[in-house]
Amino acid sequence: MSEIQSLARGLKIMELMAVSEEGVGITELAERLGVDKSSASRLVHTLVSHGYAEQIPGTRRFRLGPQVVRLSRSLLTRMPLREEAKPFLRQLVDRTGECAHLAILAQGQALYIDQVESAATLRVTTGVGTLAPLHCTALGKCLLAFTDDVPLPPELPAFTPRTITDPDTLRLHLEQTRRQGYAVDDEEYDYGVRCVAAPVYDFRGKVIGAIGISGPAGRMNLDRLPEYARIVMEASKGLSDRMSFKRA
Image (cartoon, rainbow, N blue to C red; front, side, top):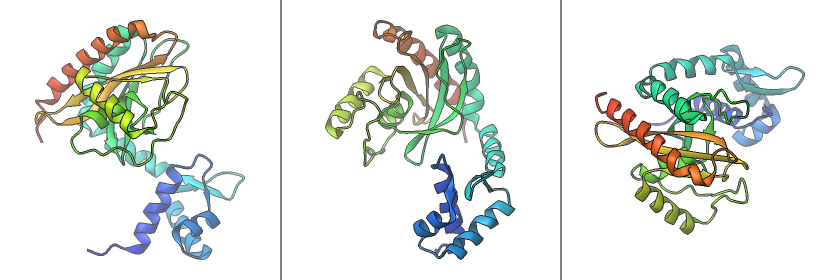
């Protein structure tokens, strides 16, 4: 079935806005879409009129609008995984004192769909709706290691000196992750931050997400990682057991 070109371009514009912290301008969009500036302008202003984009005050650049947030919230509130995970996220915070996160696989990345923050003054938070790479985050590694038929990302960019950027080294690392049942981010995505995560399964035995904790490396020191891993795996098993009763 052939696609509607104007709709496809509008969706591409939203994708470009989503990955740009500074927003995008009409000239840039025209170049990326391969259209003239007047066509790009009409597409953008159509999105603006429906609330899917907005102009950044004082600039000629555009970003995603409030309607996207409303749709995202609507989607998240209907996710059974998110609903069932909430008490397990709170349990992780209570038992470890660190922030707890929940993610699913989306667009070849880890999409954070919920978190419960720690009460600690120094804590590691990640906004709901954030997309993070698979190869250097604990939640991402879980999704990469335990989900069937998920290929390695085509590129493995370095975020810190500890990021694994060699495909063969990453494959060996993922094999170890599968053997031990959990993944670790040892200051690989953010310097000074460590994370531990474990996979969540549904009634078919398929991975549907990952749950874990993140904290400052000074508190989550290497000696305590086995303890944290045990606690996280207990939470992931409990959540998996809950999800095994959720049949489509």
